[in-house]
Image 1 (cartoon, rainbow, N blue to C red):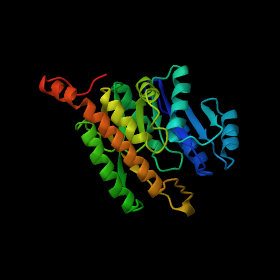
Image 2: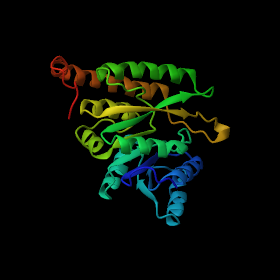
Image 3: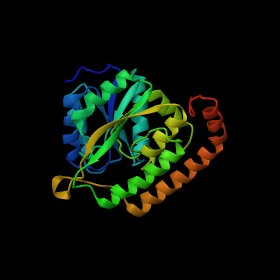
Image 4: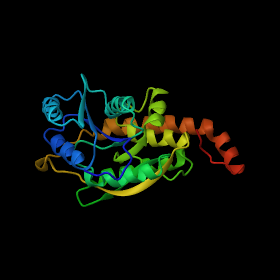
Length: 259
């Protein structure tokens, strides 16, 4: 168990129908950090019961249940509230499907502890398993994110392995009804940047597991790309409304974004 980071950091893992792979992910996360919250987002694959059995034997593993699937952002928000209620100030989010590197949790937590005013964002390092269409598609999303944040320095807007300041993210999410599903990761970094939370980017590998390796994907190109298009449309509108003030701050030599 690592002890390099401040004790006010927790891990939150939203999970929806990933099958047995979630058990491997949780064990890996617990091998590197405590505590770990798993938020079961209306799963129907029996993993909620299995995770509850694991938690019964591990006081540093907590399992929260949503009765129906509400989306990644909604699951993360539930975990954020639970973590804040116990005094945690920062949370690392990671996917439950085995794509994210649990062994890098201590490094990301240490970076966050050293710069608690930042959001520590994973910068994905792809291997040959990465679908080319997905890699190219995220370049488009990253281009829009760079524009919407006036070049705040977000290296990747979609990679969900990252550390957030809990209070700031809860305030961002409670202030509007969006970012509850696949739009969560990108909208979170844009809106946090608008609040003055600076990004700190760290390299991290990403795996795309084949079905025979236990890989599960809930990404739907049509539905989720439409969701991302609507997300960037409303973010651009929000950016344009803020632009006069942002430019005025820049001319005055002040940070363009602040809380």
